Image (cartoon, rainbow, N blue to C red; front, top):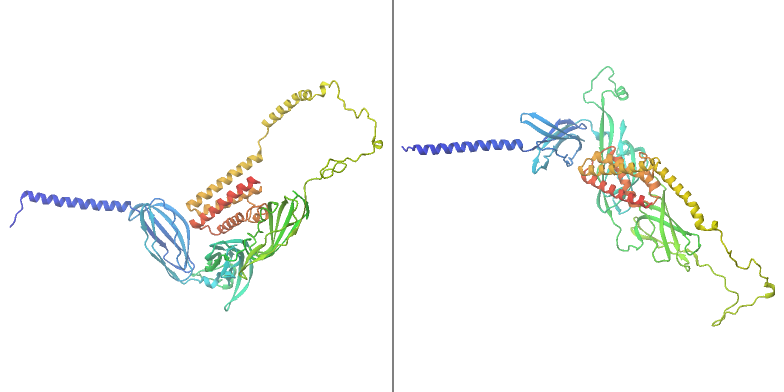
Length: 604
């Protein structure tokens, strides 16, 4: 039998102890890393609900510090809404840890099983992934039996710059207790020009008769491509019958309907399908040189008054464009340079014929000043537009406007007599007898030998000097003792508040705080426009764009950006959810409007 020496046994024992310590150190290190490393856990409460009810999804970040809210992708058949975050210390079986919890509400539209995928994101260099979950949705009340929402378009294909009527229609069988004043409509490449009055009526769909509320609006396409219009969302309040109804002495459906027995008030959100529309640009082939983007059907007439002027006198040219199309960006062709006229900036005004502004009359007024005397007419370039119905360019020739321009120089009196060609002037003599008058003292020039000192200018100035100095000192002292200019102080304070609101808007956009962003955007719009129009803040609406800003020369592009900002503020009153791209787009519009309004006020 082989026997080990004492030295060998000690070596083997040392090796066993070394492996033991290595294993213990690895186990402790792994446990320490597991305790320090962050993790992401998803929790669903409850995991079984009825259709129309809501569940809460929590994303719990353990030991990750402060984590921004993840932007969750859409889940088919389920509406997701972020409701807030909290930070707390949690004591459980896993020990004590610090958690950042982001809460979302899930509202499925129909019965079934909702698959909630695992969400992955990178936090401080670590890739964290939550476990997938399932939400079981039982049959409750069917929201589709109450009503549905629909976006209606007249066309599936349109042109860049074309103005289209659109409607968001709410079909319902039973009236809600309350309804959102204006549905939210997701826009991609469209601008809302005007919103019409809300209409109500009845409509039969299949064999069912529905009551219908329609919100009408005019949209203009601002980019090309296969664009998405929608979905639209409308929030309502309904009295929903409870599934666990207690029966009593007044168990009568009529009693319950009148007094609300056996039901609960619940917010129901109706969502429409997404419409697709193809937007194409008018072709380059055959495009007239005077085309400036007008799309529609138009007629134009122009006049110039007065017809008889002198060089340097102003001539007022008035134009009137009537028809149907996009009037917001519509303008007459620029008058060509080098035509002998000085051209000054003009003004325009639009008078709609319908509530959406699809038809109407746009009037223009421009001042021309003739620079030469031989001008006989004003020849304006033809007005060209793209007709989406005939799918071709059309031009309206503007008749020549007659003008009689006289020279500006005043003729001088000619000397008596005539000058023969190549000879000296021959003066026709007058009758000396009839023109003779003896000279008088009045005709004889004279000057006094000695001028009085009091008539000298320097003496009068010397006498008036003490009075002037005294008046200056008195005015200076009164200026020093004047009360502070309250109006100027108020203007400075208002300007400072505008700057502060704009900075808060920018910070909220960069941090993704949509609620704070829309609140700051609304405050900035009120302060900025009240400063520009010298009106009290809080009374500013989008109507000032058409009634005050555009008539004062605000560019059409800036007016469209302002309208987008007002629409965004109106929509935020019902839903403040917005992704980072949406906030960045609105911030860019606000920065462009701020720059234009600042320069516009300085120029005024």
